[in-house]
Picture (tube, rainbow, N blue to C red):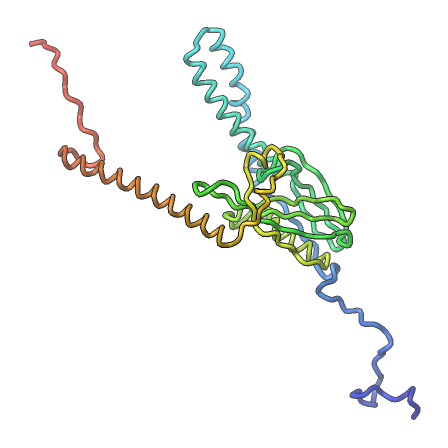
Length: 287
């Protein structure tokens, strides 16, 4: 038997021999083709609810200008002032409902086998606005995938938002969006979407840490200052959460003290707890 026909070491010299000249065709876990396509979008129930609420409120909202005009022409300024306040609150409510309705209808994320297709809000800030933009890029064009925690507010009402973005090899940025860390079941978990894009692109997910941001600057599209881009470590976040907890405990303690003072005053006046003493009866003077 010649060397060309000798079996490989450890392989028995019986039966058909395995072909060791062809490369293995098994898929590795880092191959994007090994991942099944995934879709993210608002549920039909959520979309239907926002559409119904908007359509139900629309006739009342549309009648407000006519009601304000009729009262103004009749000279009812006092009644018109209250109606103007109601119209302002109603307008803000309708805007929020409309924004959420459009967000539920238009926002979509599809993680395919070869590429990503997304339609995301193009407005800045944690709240999706009315402008949307579509993106489509293959995984091999992804340069980096990054996440960052942004802290808004102070000790009174701190809000922690987790943002994610994708940088392509041509230098263009694809902002995915923001999700509140207090939301345990977000409609679009952007941090999870970013992680899956990084896995399919065979790239590490880069965590940029936590920074403090101004709500006004974010909503107005003002570029962050160097002070806002300063990294906040875990100890700083723990101090912020501790101060917030202390503030909330102080508010709860103040409410309990006020309730206790009211109960003691009711006992001192001899009136039942939670019931206001009756007003004295005025004599008419008629015998």
